[in-house]
Image (cartoon, rainbow over all chains, first blue to last red; front, top):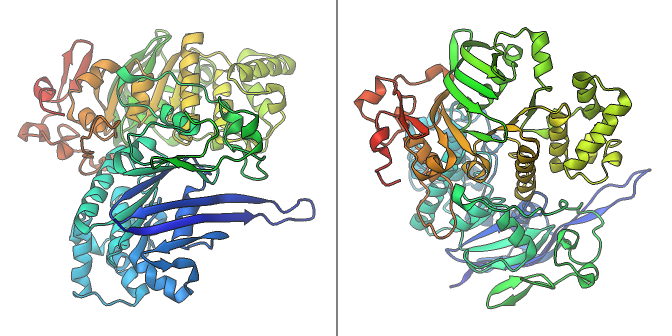
Length: 317
Length: 320
């Protein structure tokens, strides 16, 4: 199986502007992320707010410029491309955003919203545009009769379907899904996830699925990357692999089962995610970790693999 | 302790809520679940006597607190109850706190107002409560502003405010929806402990069936402004009898041992202006028949639970 996407040591450092009373500070939003995404697979990236998962998504599509590392998409080194070349390539790598309410221009009819990618790319579809749009709407389970509606006339779930139709318009091979269901009701979330499963099978798509919801990621993805403060702390080769990093275990224990017979004793994980600015040396999770030792506070653990299951921890479980 | 019977709410001629009933006793957690737009928050606002603020009124039914109907209480008397005997925790801790005031005075105000404490007494109480909520260095926190704190910490402060006057009933409206999973787990654990330690009656409003399964003793499932099923939590999860409850449970991804495909529910929650006739769920229901579009179903009782469905007797026999 060949890799559609190869991410190597990808990093992004943001620096806050200094002022007369404040020194400029910098933070590593994404720090040395490396992984391969084979064609046709679904990799889930899971973590809490501020862990860098959305920044990672944007770096991969080069919507923001990385500070270091490389991204290889289907044999092309993305960082070597000019903006013009990037734009052409993006026809094959598309993104679905978290908030369908702000992803579509409120003044556009659905027809225009779905046709916009063709305009931007200067591509003339094989069929007449009206037919193409109708096909796309149907593909995402929308009634083509809605084509003349405006975004405010449809529901949140329908809007997210339009967002997916736009992303699919140019027949991409990679979809980056950034929390596509986080703003939707559970019933609608289940519809959208079902749609994404069908589309993947039908069109042979490859997904990078960003989410904070571990049970959803376990349900939907083939492999899981767990991020904490900009780093991948664990790469689970399949969704049944037991957690080896204490943070992953905490995440799993914080996720409830929809079954009153499987109540959990919630282990009180102390503290919260520290500020990403001026992190102390060593493992970023050390202050909250029950297994932390002196080594963890001085030396950052590297991600090292054992049978394809990589973990960045000095004392893995 | 708190008993709501056949509650109806109207805004002008529009009736978004009708026939909602539940009771909750000390030491007990009741979950109210449903999709957005099903009337969960409106139920909370009715119980808190806040409807006049948004132009609504109670058109029927009773809200009994400690045996006395409070729906007819004048606003002055309600003020003693609200924040005093009944505490409210809202969804968004960012908007529940005054951004211009330090944490300490905001929490102090509750005890001053409801318990007639002096400033020093109230502060001592604030520090004590913050301590029981496992907030590190409570005395220092009192001098902080809300923007200096994380979301989870702010939600704890909101809980502290709700607890400051030592209420008997706590209403928590989506208390963890805005929080990360590990913080959600901490807050849920905290609420659980409070119910046990203080013998509180907790009404937990949520859209998340997994949170309900984890914490509640009994649940009310709401759809389109009506209660459609209620009962003990084990019974409802074991044998959900209303197709809407079944569908809600089927929407949640389970662990790996269950490879069932997520199905979702076709269509969307109707808006209050076009609630369907008959059973409100019939346009989205896989099991609907002619009668469902005409006649509103009565509750069919089985043990301690009840479902408002014409086919409740046979519903659970079908594969979920």
